[in-house]
Length: 299
Image (cartoon, rainbow, N blue to C red):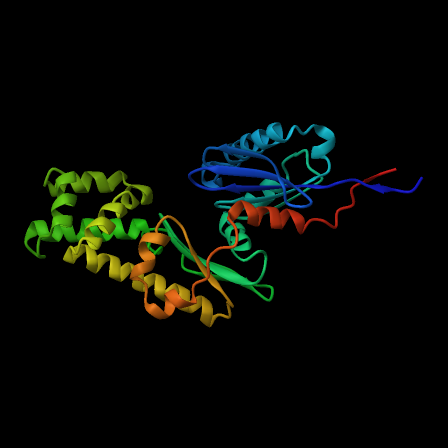
């Protein structure tokens, strides 16, 4: 009997440092099920990251009403934070799964695929950290994103760090006081040693928690806030321009700081930015569709 092609399904998962999202679509792109779970990053360990991914896609599978037969006809694309860590990809590829095939990429590249519908292009992510990523004619592009505090310029963590630095200088009398710097020092009860104690255990996320305060004061005209935000915007400007110089035909700004920071960018950069076509889960689904050469048929 000749083989009869069966309908295929596509699972996309975006596994990030703050949460994990999954979506199942059919061949026409209609959403059949969605799911959410907690952080999924290899920094927490492969087992923890995969457990989070499994919870997210498990919820999507349940909503779609899928059983083993449908999963065996599902192609999965997984975008995962920290996949570049040594040995991470190999460990993930060795895991058992119920799908016809599975493909992995970084969460950033998943977002880039989604932003440009799988076409050549680049993204700049401005959130807790910052990075420029893209692909052009088979070449991967990368600008920055080597980790806070040695990199991630223009990020939320970078804004927070600069605010604490200037607040301490203002406390010493080395810098003019402002409403922003006063508020930052009040967080430490106006005691530099409390800031030092906080610094000893603070993560990039802790520094980034100060970013909304910096943006609020900058938007209200605070001199120190404006100085910090303008400097961050110039760093993002440089990342965007560098991606264009490297051949990216289009660049999209993403991340939690994208909207508040965009008005501070240089006019030439703002004019050249392109809105995102889709999200990182859409990008993971595009990755899944790229696996479509795998034969799935029945006799």
